[in-house]
Image (cartoon, rainbow, N blue to C red; front, side, top):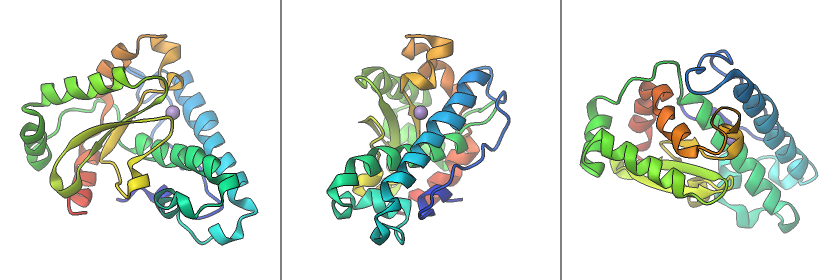
Length: 212
Ligand code: MN
């Protein structure tokens, strides 16, 4: 299934979580889930809607099209569309690639991970390292263009969609994603997060995105 939020047009809507607030509690506490989904993600959606409300030329563009052609967005709202549209796209992906009791990758996805990074453990180490090194707020993404996996971090709510690349999956390293439970210990959050990655969901995305 595609990231449906990417196909949304104005007015944009917050997607429902596919699980309860406490589903990922071994890694992400209930309070963080509620704030993150209901407040932070909702605010990105609301602010994106505000930014494009009066720009009727943009109303026939999908979120994916807006983020992929920011130069066509009027300058006075370009920053707002970049930040809030990116926030909407990134979080909409994020909720769908997690579940309780994640497991580990298998099949062609596991083979692609081994080929690109040597082993699943080496992949996690490199991903976590990119997350720790992302200065300030941002995301760590994995791309799967042509089936080849690559780790690429982005600041703020930037996304590889600016270059037309839909990420395979990614982790949110903004403090709002982990601070209540992990405080300043971002490395601990990154390490624990693997427990809730939904590898079946990632594998479905891989099947779709490897061909792009
Ligand atoms: Mn976030």
